[in-house]
Image (cartoon, rainbow, N blue to C red):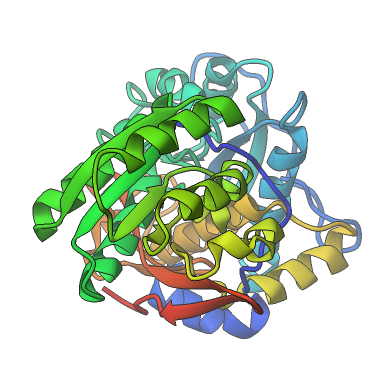
Length: 387
């Protein structure tokens, strides 16, 4: 399964909070910082799926994220972001309780269901989705997962994480509009590489482009060098895709330039916010697609003011998931099951990360295309503002 490759705090994305909330909620959509609001009551451990401590005025929503172990910082950032969304919107009819998945996602889901939660936000890791679904599915409690494993979507599971295939499709379609019709690709071994290969071939079929060769590599210099030599021997490319993050891209760029002097290099959403990309001369002129950077800075500044540290980039998923819940809650009667049909709005929603909607349980996001230049990274094709 695909998982988030890294949970970096770095990023050049921009976002907003209070000043943009009217727009975000109109278009869509824990740990509480000291002095902001009282914490929610602790989750009840009453077994059997009953509704202990029934709240007649608030919707009960569970946030399933790691609160201990190696991903505790990421989980805490998501929990903080969820709290921010409630505070920024002054929402009083939604109660969010955080459950730690690090000790077992299934047991966390069992506690959440027993406590009467009607919606689950999370889990974070793709490997935990099946365990949570095994509990939430029979209880008819839907999940908005932060995973980016598109295979997990559907049947009550809504995948909200950024789907790598969509970034590659956006870049290839943009390249096609610029007259590029022949592609080669370098993809890493493993799940991410397989998903990237599938996306490249599917986009080529739908656009009429030609993929002359796809070469795989292990994530080491020797394997990468060999893959580039094999690729160069198989065709004359207008563009070469490096379907990997910045670490391998900065190694691949000079090697590609030695073999293919004029081919346009195309990267992935994993390049976003990575200073090494702009600092690598061989990557100048490269294109890659990412979610819009229009709102993140204001969000990040507000987060740092409240919590005294920078947020992880993925934390915006927690914020946007709560905004989405708040929007749906306008027509959701307390005590009823979550109105899952509301998530299928073809017009989509607006969040900190831009426009998004769900198709068969998988998020579809609006991406912008960026170009690497000597002075940094610039947007050459803005993200659509709506569907």
